[in-house]
Picture 1: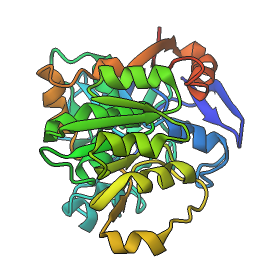
Picture 2: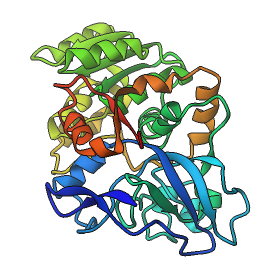
Picture 3: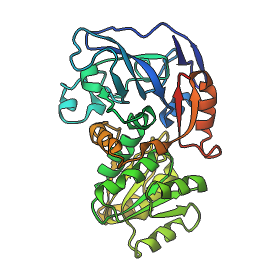
Length: 348
């Protein structure tokens, strides 16, 4: 089969590899019908994730069709259409039992294993461990292009942004960074009744998309960013500031926007240290949250997508085939210049 293989920083190749096969009784093999690229994949290619070694197949998101089933699998059969999420869970370890499969002990202490600790989903087929507790059946009426964004981006924005930020009815929310994950947070803040959602970005296209996704206001980054947001919140600042970029300056921006008693929900993947002004923050009773997505919200989000409440398909702006994988990466890497949010990649 063909797959996108990592060969060290700044090096990847769409090449022939051995077919995905069952290894354990709890496995299934899924033929990949749709996949996408995540910002984490770009971090890997920058050399920021040393656990990813030469020869690893990249990718951790897929929608596909089961082609082989292990002897211990009870909930799925050959031919089933499934969502392969970014997080794999055994369902039995302490962290899975606590609803934190992002730290599943059975699969290595981290639930994100595809394209990280085992071969991933940017391939014609993928082996899925612990299928019964990790996969999700895709409901009839939900397209591949809708379902694929439930593998990572939408749950991340919702769980690590909206839920961790404790958004409540009537809250004011700022989302710093209107890329795919930031827009996922914008798209799901309405589920908790936020009264005002302010999108903040340096890119006009993304701000326009944020308004389409449900933001009430859009603020272009500049010298007056903090003042603009403060003016939109009666001089108080926001109840919840969601950081969805992963740079020191964007986290500092989020921290400067939140009011006393508010929450800063860090969603971005940071590759360098961040120095926070704790001498100013401690007295404001501010909460700072952060973390890796658990994807436990997928069943809820699937229902919301199936009902039309969440138009997940809006996330996809560019489509490619497997043999255009390099082009897909180029477009996604330069997302702002290409007016790209998420790319949809199919066999063709």
